[in-house]
Amino acid sequence: MTTTPAMNAGFIHQSIEQRHSKDLVVHECKDGPSQGWTHLRMDVWVMARSWSKPTTWCYEIKVDRADWFRDSKLHLYEPLCNRLVIACPHGLLDKSEIPGDYGLLWVTKSGRTLMKKKPAHRDVEIPESLWRYVLMCRSTIGRDHGEHREDRVAYWRRWLEEKHEHQDIGHRVGRRLQQVHEEQVTKVEIKQRELESRIRDLETVARVADECGIDLLTWGVGQRAREVFTGSAKVVEHLEQARQAIKDGLGVCRGRVT
Image (cartoon, rainbow, N blue to C red):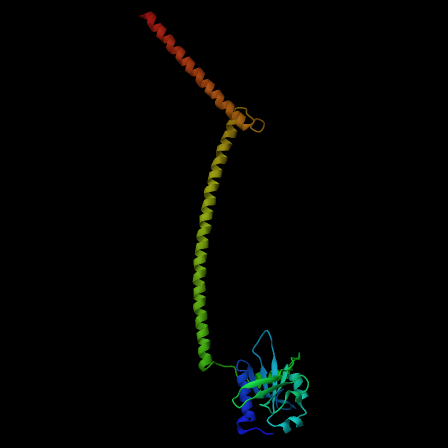
C-alpha cells in the first residue's frame, strides 16, 4: 500500500512539527558530526520544552508497508531518545504490528495526528555527541526577529515597569518604617528622661534620709513616710497652740496696762 501525493513524508514532517509546536524539533537529525563519523539519522528528533519533565522523542516516518517491514535499524535509535514512535499515514500500519515499547502515530489527510499506540518512556542518557550536533550544527543563537522579538520587547518592557513599581513600593514602605522607628525612639527617649528624673529624686530622698540617720534598707519607706507626715501634723498643732497662747497673753497684758 502506498500513500497519496498529499501524504508524502514531507507532509508527515510538517504534521509532527505542528504537533510539537512548543518544543524543539530537528528534522533529519544525526547523532553526531558527519565528518569522520558513522552516524545515524532520525527522521524527526524532538526535545520537549520542560525543565520538570525533560523528554526526547524520535519519529521514524513510514509511507508504505514494504519500507516498514524492511527496516531493521529501529533498535539503534533507542539510546537516542526517551520515546520512539513510528509515524505513518492514517491506517497504513496497525498497532498490533508495532513491536515492543514503540509508539504508533497516524496522520490524517487534514494533518491531524492520532497517537494509536502510546510509546513507553525509557530512562536513557542521551549521548553528548547528539547534544553537540544539535547545538553546533542545527541551532542559531542571535537576535530575535519578528513576532518573537516583539514578544521579548514586551516582556522586558513589562519587567521594567514592574521593577519601577516595586521600587516605588519599597521606598514608601521604607519611609513608613523609618517614621515608625523614629516615633518609637522618641517615646523611648521621653520615657528614659522620666525615669532618670525619678532616679534623681529618689537619690535626693536617700541622701536626706542618710543625713537624718535613717536607713531605708532596714526601715520601711512607707512606715517612715507616715511617721514624718504624722510628726509634721503634730508640730503644726503645737505651733498653733503656742501662737494662740501668746496671743491670749498679750491680750491680758494690754488689759492691765489700761
